Image (cartoon, rainbow, N blue to C red; front, side, top):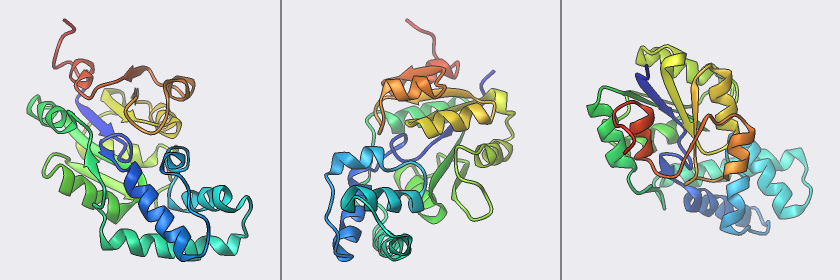
Length: 222
């Protein structure tokens, strides 16, 4: 029986593509590097900020030196911290779905590879009071697809892993849910496509947030 839903952040509960691309391109430009098309960031994000920087540098320059990573990350973090909600929007139907899940007794959490302070700010400002546990990248916790963060969120929610839906938009998310022993749900409104989600372990693939109500047992299929 499902009693908790654990969500990824970027591309799942928050439409952050334009935000990530905006800060990424401003950081690249500040460091003197060519910027990238917004759509290219769909395949760059998802594995944490350090890997994002390396992917940005590779896409921008073709090759990079490791000493270029930290300065680019410093500029990116500074820009992000100044306005973490810039160009961040709710996916259509997500807020209503989260409220319906919570009203139905489903506990809600977020685990993200985005830095912890940014994750917490976006979650609370976009969906105030809806998530009972939120965790982003912290030094003491391995990044997804390691299951550690997802399992910590499950414990905070008082839910056994097998009673959790893990919802995300990338292969990293599906691998995380599988590694944590949770039921995996891939979403098609985010950064990646159905093929990647299925290949990496999605047990369900949905195209609208409202479909989560059926998977959580709160609605029946008409």
